[in-house]
Length: 305
Image 1 (cartoon, rainbow, N blue to C red):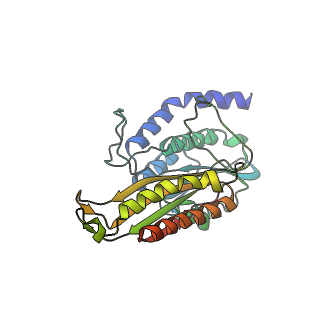
Image 2: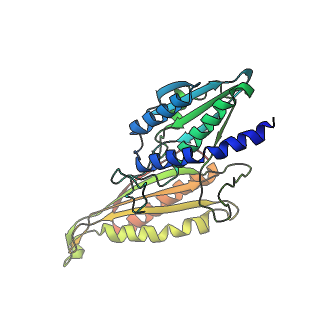
Image 3: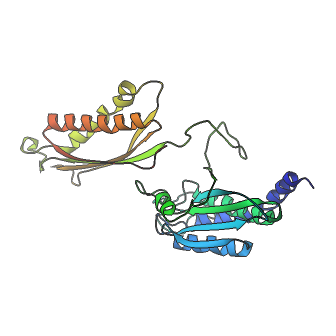
């Protein structure tokens, strides 16, 4: 028997099962550190498969499932994340989110389905396995800066593991469905979260001279930071700086006294990471000095690349 051919044939037969799992997870998303029902569903499926030693509530709602093969050998781990995002789904799909304001918009629903499908195939291959397999379901991946990985590791998720593999679905026009992309070195960048508060002084719109406009300062900051990457980062290096939230003012005829700005910075090189944090605050400090505002700056570092 050609084991590779047999595994591929069995994998194709799993398509309806994987689609059903994917639709279930997509329709029932849960936010970071709240993946209670998601974890229960994963355990339910693992128990149906059988053969796995299951550990629950690891690093929060994380799940570890270990399968010992027929022979001795290394332990290889597969990892999938579990949490969804605080986004209102408007796709109109039959399996759209039933949890208002929460959506699997980052592919973790697919990751869990893939991991469970792999768990099922591996259980069927147990007589041929020389070593062990560990399936790790990680909660709170989206929760920067801590996430769920560090806590799971601290609670033993990687104890005895010789190698670990993970993947991420990716809407790349150059990679078709069923294609895997690889590269040497880092593939997923470090993801840091930026929180900024600019503090001014409120005043009536008819007397702006009596106040200190936080909106003007915030707008200038957003404009000025666009040059950081083009003028401070080595052209042979890379960085992405994006601000997705700008909250300022509640009344059309009042000079706002506060501006809340939130964003993210993605880097591969630790030195570029340090540079970005420094230059962002440099620009913020300069803008606030020029506009007479004050600021609070928090740069939350996620996991390294």
